[in-house]
Every structure is written in C-alpha cells, then in structure tokens.
Image (cartoon, rainbow, N blue to C red; front, side, top):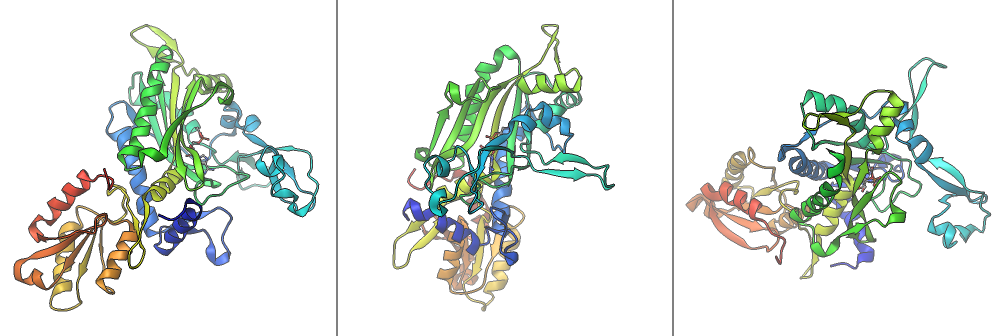
Length: 443
Ligand code: GAP
C-alpha cells in the first residue's frame, strides 16, 4: 500500500486516468474545487445512491421518497436560521488578498498566512449560502438561494407528504439531491466542495419516542458502510459533546472515516427535536402538527436525521478500495464491493480472430440484460486485466481457443487473480452468486 501521505494523490490520478472523476471545465484551466464524474464515476455514484435508497426507502415500510426543488421560498432560509446563522467569521490578508476562516489554523497558528507577511483585517461574517436573482425584469427580481441542505425541502413538505401517503408515526421522508455551500476552505478532492450531493432522511417520531429511535438509526447507518465493504478499523462513531451540539440538537453522532488525510466526518445523525417544524410553523402561520388518533391529540413530531454526502461516500469507497500489490510491476486494484463496482464483468476475446470476438459478443448478449458489462478486444490480455483491476471490475471472462472445442471460458477473479474454467451456461448464475456472496479479501 502507498503511504497515506501520497494515497490521495494516487486516487486523484487513478480517477482521472480511468475516467472516474476529473476537474471541471478543464479546457479553461478548471474551476476551483469543482469536479466532473466521467463514465465510471457516474456509475459508481449511481450505485451509491441506489444502495442508500434501497436500504433507506425501498426495503422499508415506513419511509417514502421526495424530490423537492433546489430553489425554495427565501422565507424557508429565514425560518431555518440559515440567513442569520449559517455563516463563518472571515479575515482578509491586506497584502496577498487571500481570505481565511478567523478560527482556522492559518490564522490561529499563523502557519500559512504570514508567508506574505501581510496584516489581517478584522473578522467579518460571511454567509455560506449562494444567492441568485429570480425573475427577468430588472428591479423586479428577488433574491433566492441555492439550498445548502436538502433537509428543509422535507420539513416544508412534511404535512403534504404525510397526508397524501396517509403515513402514521413513526415514518420517514428521504431525499437525494444537490446542495450548495460557498465553503471557505474546500479541498481534499471531492471531500469538501461547493456543489455536492446529499442523501438525507428525516425520520418523524412521537416526541417521547425520539431518544429510543436515535441509536438504532446510528447503528443502521454505521452498518450500511460495513455491508458495502468499508474496513471496520477505518470507521468509527463519534458522539458529540454537549458544547459541540448545534443549539437545536439534543444528540448528534458522527460516523467518521479515516481518510488518507486523517479521521473526518462522513455522515452525521442528529436528534433535531421539533426545532425545524416549530420554526416553519411560526414563520408560515400554517398548522404543522400531527393528529395522533390513538391519543386523540395534536403535536409536532420530533425528528431523527441521518444526513450523508454522496460525494463523500464515493471518496470513502474509493479510498477504502484502493490497493497496490507489489510484484514484477505494481498492480493497482480497486477492491470495490461488486454492488458498487461500475462494471461487474468484462468480456475479452483472447485474439481478434478464429471466431473469438463473435463468441465473446454472444456471451455479452447473455450477460448484459442482468448486469453492467464491458467488452474489450484491444491490447495484450494482461493489460486488459490490469485496466479492469483499476476500474474495480470484479470479474473478467476470456474467450480463447478452447472455447470453440468445449464451450468453456476463463473466469478471472479481481481480488485473488485466480482463473478457472467454467462452462458458458454456468457463467451468469455463477457470477450472480459470487456478487451476492462477496466478502472483503481476508475476511
Ligand atoms: N441537514 C444536516 C446537514 O446538512 P451537515 O453535517 O452540514 O448536516 C451532512 O451535512 C453531510 O453532507 C456531511 O456529513 C457530508 O457528508 C455532506 N457534506 C456537507 N458539506 C459538504 C461539502 N461542502 N462537500 C461535500 N459534502 C458535504
């Protein structure tokens, strides 16, 4: 394995080389901390979203989905506290004009900033929300914000969703979507960016039940990462201390991952009480209470919120899967869980003659309806295997001279590099069975 200090650079370079993720607008020199997902990246991201949606919504009876607009009424952000509270104190260097968080390490330890020797301005508050103008007539436009979290779309719609889907407490509303924050210190590849995607669940419960619903959600979310192959020794739970809690939260636990740059937050699970619903009820003047037909009374539900980042999860899965094996040459391999791997099986004709490409295409036709397949006839077979190792493809199938004789092919395993002969008729069930039975190497 590469040392942790160079691992992030290696991941960034592999992502570029294999078309996972690359800098946005690169032909114009790129845009700071903006990244585009290429053919493999987009599949990995889709698989992450799909795995989250399946475990949070489809596999449960008590959670429904929502897709709210990114642009919301500005009063939403007044009520939620984002206009007055979602801000950081900033200082500017008078000489080099760089901007720093007033409580950031560059200012506190004077590590980076004094390089230019400049004086710093007094701290000024800076709101992290992106704003834009809505409307086309000059003078009649209004300021709207790009949502800094998907959660508020759920809170303002909760009564409509509860009534139309005829939900009874406890129930959840889940949403995946883009969020925007004008982060002062974005960085570490896709860990902190200004445009990112969240996967959020607001789980509404009877107030007296909130505490007992909190821990099961923490465990559920922690186990989700483990089930998708994350190493247990790089994943931990960190309950917030009293002084760290947001004023509205009565409990919060972060799921942290040991990234190449250290332990950092991957997801947060918070007990938000009735803070958000109460604020929206006060601000909108609408009744947001729930009628409990057993107790025959109305009340505001409390909310447990597991809030995860899609991009941050993608980085976690990539970092955890990245491996280098010493040999004649270093083998770079992404040991992604097959459920997340962008391509499940690659199909190669050994050479481009003797009917091998035709037979390989026939096999492709059988496998493609069931899984993501990639056909590759180009280059030496060893190089084709290496390309798929870097792409994280768990299985490769090679059609060779023997295939015409006995209809068997080689099935090669990404993690062990073991090759075995298998009859083409068995290919689909065997691959499907191995995908579902997959374990982290060494387990
Ligand atoms: N509704 C609660 C909320 O938004 P948060 O801790 O600010 O809580 C939740 O964000 C998750 O969203 C984080 O744990 C992280 O995975 C992701 N996230 C937040 N800011 C991000 C950023 N600038 N870039 C990438 N992901 C981010």
